[in-house]
Length: 175
Image 1 (cartoon, rainbow, N blue to C red):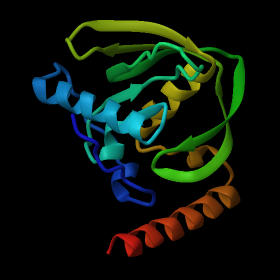
Image 2: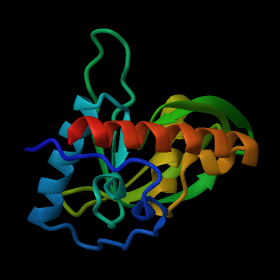
Image 3: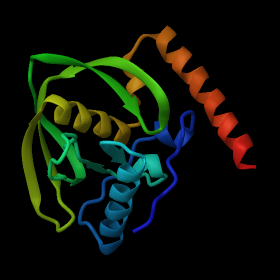
Image 4: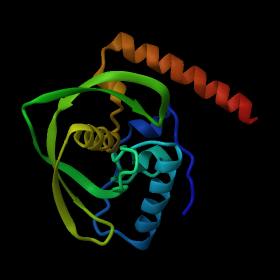
């Protein structure tokens, strides 16, 4: 298990559509473990493979945030939304690829998702609340969509400018 570097916006790889996986291999299971370790270390509640530079359709998430709650790590391979509620929620979203930037995003309040687990079994679950927001946010990453693509152009430009400035500062500090 390794902590992987998270790509920061703007990065062209974050805007590309990820390829389907099909049958998961040992390499995919190792990637899932690395992604969970990276997500928990960040800390975050979700992470998509493109965020660690792997353009394949895999996400991990764990939205159990209550003090003392048992973690519920999920690995979703080739996830697809099968149903979305008409009711909508607005959450203030952030992203590990756009640190310290947040915006209100409106999404369906509940979704049913189908995916393959790391063992190759097909799964289906209906998520609501924070789980629904998180799974939709991470599936967006697989399609090259960032949460800022759901906000107005002025807000998106402001966040992108701030993210670029932070990315440059981090690069200077690292050198």
